[in-house]
Image (cartoon, rainbow, N blue to C red):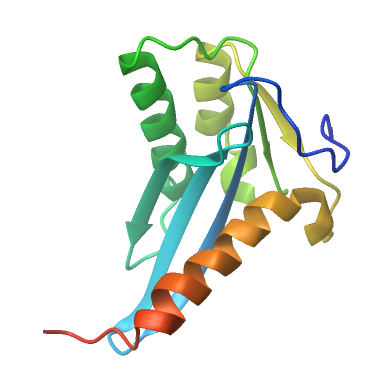
Amino acid sequence: RDLVERDFTATAPNQFWVADLTYVRTQSGWVYVAFVLDVFSRTIVGWQTSTRMYNDLALDALKMGLWARRRAGQDVTGLVRHSDRGVQYRALRYAQTLDQAAAVASVGSKGDSYDNAMAEVLNSLYKAELIFLDGPWTRR
């Protein structure tokens, strides 16, 4: 269910995170990237990259965010983690990880990128500022 309804605002850290996956073509093949962004601070709290799309790519990014915030002594209880309806975000282990952190999943409607607009913008900025501006990436 969509707990966000396109209102990408938070009044404190760890209230609301958005998550998404993207991919980039390189001269060596595809690279897949998962991001988790804290809506309040606009900080990437978790990320993962891989040359293959594996089941736990999104989960690894989530776990990084949870680990980093807990390590810093921050409470993530009640966190709302919002994403699209990708299978990675609806996987049982992903849901269990959220549950163990006392966090809640929120998903936008099917096929509507505006429902996860903040994460989509992060993907666009990543590609524009790092990949397309500094690319092409080659093996060196």
